[in-house]
Image (cartoon, rainbow, N blue to C red; front, side, top):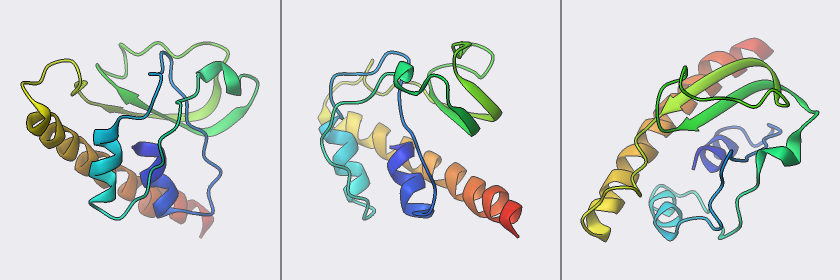
Length: 128
């Protein structure tokens, strides 16, 4: 979701998206909740971080369970600055699809708010 949201905010950005332990598909619920706010995300297979080894990133944005301190970024990933968006994985504990969708909507809204601030207050200000 973070990649799709950031691409919508700044279509001039070069964005890479990968995971430490990526799922084998993009969740249909994630696709659905992004569509609700006008962001089209196509079904695809998430990439593994090793696809981007050797690239130095201006910003590394991590999204996932736990805190920034708990997340172990592999030493082969190089970056100048890092930002972590910590959320409990909504797919680990939910009673039904409606509850899962509600949790994903909440996370979507939080990610959107954080990335909107990041894009408009940090990235755009850097360019000015």
